Length: 226
Ligand SMILES: Nc1ncnc2c1ncn2[C@@H]1O[C@H](COP(=O)(O)OP(=O)(O)O)[C@@H](O)[C@H]1O
Ligand SMILES: [Mg+2]
Image (cartoon, rainbow, N blue to C red; front, side, top):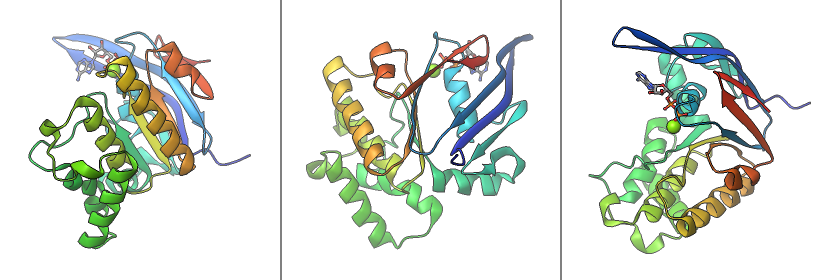
């Protein structure tokens, strides 16, 4: 058997707000094989985004462990975690999260700057090639607000692929898009991840979208089950 690219073991996470404790994750377990496409579904408020943040090293769990590419995310220093995340994980969010003051080429270059392995020129060339791959070759100097929602999400996909991560985590990537645009963005996401043999973990509330993934898990009552 392959070493899983991503594992989660007994994840617990709660929030306390106005003196009230909400237990969101209550022992979630997960193992994802390299190259898999996995959908995570669940009701609004079930904790899907919380889970994705914990899986990607953006938010520490109260208890439990996450491994990415065989390394235990929360057992290492935050500095090493940041580096592991930059090298191994690409994120796509529902609301794109592009920086509005930069053009999309600079946005796409950002993950490579965090890693610092490429020259600035090489970063720019790679960013431009990725933007061409997502159909934005003639929008390189546009800032996010000069683009449509679908174009912004395509730029965000290019950004997610910048460091050639083994793992792509997508949180409702078509949630802000109309059906037709959403379908195009999904085609691109599946196509580009498959071409790179990357693993895709996608949160969605759409059964049709989930059906495009090889496997679906449901998050309910703080745990994941088939
Ligand atoms: N920072 C926070 N502080 C307090 N409660 C939060 C916080 N983030 C999320 N929650 C609560 O946790 C629950 C799960 O949120 P979320 O993970 O965003 O769910 P989903 O993505 O499945 O809709 C929600 O009820 C939400 O209100
Ligand atoms: Mg969410």
